[in-house]
Length: 468
Image 1 (cartoon, one colour):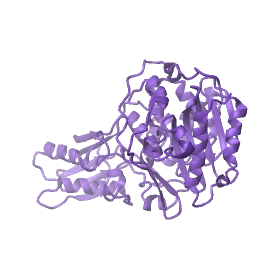
Image 2: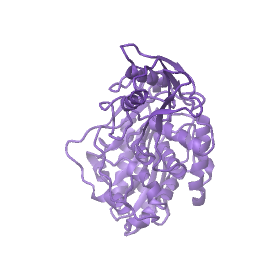
Image 3: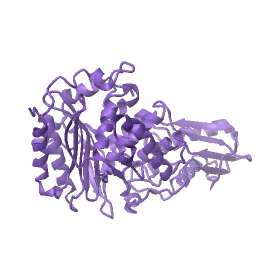
Image 4: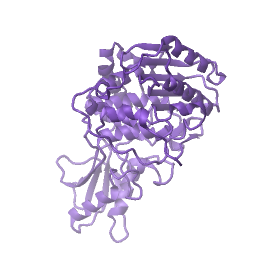
C-alpha cells in the first residue's frame, strides 16, 4: 500500500471518530500473560500514492509549522504521569521532535527494557527494508515422486485461510482455491497421499522464554512454514493446533478426497524440479506489515521475522531471525547515531521475556522512518493503530482526558505481565510531530488496564501540548 505523507500525517489531526465503534479487549492467558486482541473493523481506505523518493516528513509539509515544545513543559507532563502509583514509580520515556530531531525529554531511554509488542515496530521496519514491499508469500502444491502423491510446500504464509468464510481480508490466500487448482491439474487422477513440506523453517517452533499459555491460550501458533487459519483448530476459535503444518496437510487432504476416503498425510520434502500443480499467494509484504501492527498479530510478526532472516542470509529460525533483526535495524539506526546493540530481540512478536529494547532506539527508528522513502516505509505509520479509531487502540481514548489524543495519536501497544508500553507518533496542538516511547515495566498484577490509561493520558497530554 502506498500513502501520501500529507494524507498520513495530516490525517492525525483531521481524523474524526466514528459512532458505534468496535472494541478491543485484553484477554488473560493461563499464566497471566495478557494478549492484545484487535477489534474487527473495516480497514481505512488507501490514501493517494506518495511522490517518489520524498521523505515522509518533507512530503507532509506540516511537521514543523509550530514552535518546538519546551523541554521543561514536557518534563512536567511526564512527572505528573510518574506520580500515579499504578506505574510503581518506573516509567522509561523518550520524546523526540521529528522535524528538528531535538530530544524533548528522556528518562532511562538507553535502558534495555522488556518492550512487549512495541518490538513489532522493529519487525515492521526491518521487513520493509530487507524485503520487496510487493513480495508475496506463496503456498504451493507440486507433484510427488510417485503417481497419486502430491506435496504441499509451506512458504511461511500465516494468513492462508481454509475458505472464503474463514478469510480475514479478501486478499488472504485460500486453501480451497489451492485444492481446486490441484484437482483440475490432476484431471481425475486420485490423490492417495499428501506430503507436508514445512522445511522452510528450522529450529524450535516456540520462542525463547515463551509462556506455555501463549499457544494454549491462543495468542500465537507454533511457528511453522505451513498453517491454515493461523494454526487455529477452527477459524472461529482461539485455540491453536500443536502441529499447524500437519493440520494444514490434513485439511488439504480432506479437500482432495475422492469417494469419501481422505489421502494419507505424512511429512516429507518436495522433489527438486517437481511439477507445480497449484499455488496461492498472500497479500503483499507492505499490507502484511500494516495488518501485523494494527492488530498486533503475533503469527504475522514471527513469519515476517523469518522472511527477514532468509533475506539476510540467516537460518529461518528464532536465532536466525534475532540476528537478522539486529542487522537490518542497525542499518536504519546507525546513521542516526544509535548502536545496533540497542536492539536485542529474541523473537519478532515481542512475546519473549528475553527481548530487550532501548526506548530511545525505538523513537530514533520512528524518526528514521519519517525521514525515509515513503514508498518503502509508509506502511509502518499507516499500520500503527489510530487512537480511538482502529486496531488495538480502537476502544481507548474515548473518554476522559485521553480523548484529546483521539485521532492524533498513532501508536503500537505493548502488554506483558508487569509491562505496559506505548510507542508511536503524536501531533501536538501547535502542529509539531513527536515520536515517543513510553514503557512502564513495574506494573503490578491485575493493573494492566489502569497502566494503559496512565500512558494514554500522557500521550493525550502531548497531543494537547502548546508547551511553550
